[in-house]
Image (tube, rainbow, N blue to C red):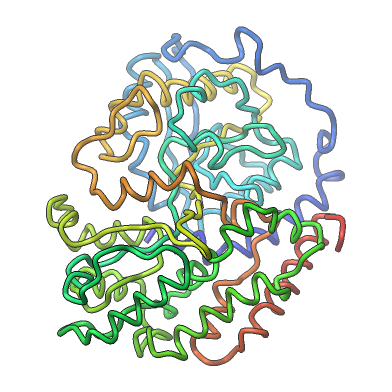
Length: 451
C-alpha cells in the first residue's frame, strides 16, 4: 500500500526535518541566504526536447512508485539524448532520502510529498530548485496548482497526477439494500447513514463502517475530514503559531466524534486489529457499507476487482465529507510530485528542469495513457477506463482544502494515538494531548514562533 510508508515514517521524517532546519545555519553556508534565481529568465525553462547528449541525471523513487516514470524517461531519452538513471530508494523512502542527502548524496530529481512540512527541511537548507513560472502551470486543471508544491508563494514541486482526497468510499449495493437513495451531506448525516445501514440489518453486512487500526495509518482520516471547514477558516495557521491547540475544542470534538462511532457499535468488532487489506476486502465484498479513506485503498479494491471499470463503477462509489457538508480534504503524496535539487552543476540543473518540462508537456499524454490515470492538464484527456470513484475523488479537489500534512508545519503521530484509542489504551483527551505535545516539540525545534 503506497500510503503506509508515508504515514509510518511521517513523524520520524518531521523530526529529522526539524533538526535539519535547526542546524541549517551551520551545516549549509547558503542556508538563510538570499536567492536571486530569476525563474522568469528566457532560458530558465529549456525547451522540452532540446538536445542533451552526454547528460546523465539521477531520479530517486520509492519502491511503490518506481514504475511510474517509465514512459517519460524513455521518451525523454529518445527525444534529447540524455540518460536518466532511475534509482529505487528502499523503504522507509522519506527517511532514507533524508539520510542520504545529509551525508552528501544528492540526486538531480526525486519523487517527494509536496506538502509544506515535507518540503520545509530542503527549503531551509536551500537544496531545491525553484519551479516558478513553469510553462505548464497555467495548463493545470482547476485546483491542481494549489493542491501542493508551493511554500510561501514559491513553487518547489511539480504535481504530475491528482493527489488523493480523504472521503468516503461506499458500497452501492449495500446502500441499495438498506434503502439509502442519496449520499449524506455533513458529518451528522454521515453518522445517520451508518445507523440506517445498521438498522436495515442487511444480510452479509457485518458493520456499517470498517476501520483498520491494525495498520494504523487510516485512523486519522475520520478526524481529518471533520476539520475541513476549520482548515478553510485558518485552523492550521492558528495551530502553526500556537494560537490554537489540538487539545482545544475544534480538534478535540473531531476526535470525540470519531470515538462515538465505536461506542455506538458502528464499526467492525475487530477494528483494533484489522488491516488495510481487510478493509478493502470488506467494502468490495459488501461486508461493510462505508470506509473513510484515500485513493490508495481504492487501488487495493480495484485490484480485487481485477481493475474492471464496469464492475467497480457498479459497486463502489465515492463522496467527500466534512463537518457541515462535502468538502474534500486533499493530501498529496510522494507519488504525485517531483522536485529538482540544486547540485551546483548548472548544466544538470537545467536538464532536470527540462525533464520536468518534458514530462508536463510533450511526454504527458503518453504518461497518462501508460498509467491509466486522471490527467492534471487541460490539454490532455483522461482515459475512459478510469473508474468513476476516482473521477469523483479528483472532482473534489477544486473545492477542497489541504490536510494537516499539507498545511501544518509538522506532522505528529496522530494516527498512532488514534489507533491506541481504538484499541482502548488512550482516551480521546490523551490522544489530543499526546499530539499537541509532540507537535509543540517539533515546532519548537524548527524555531516556530509561539512555542
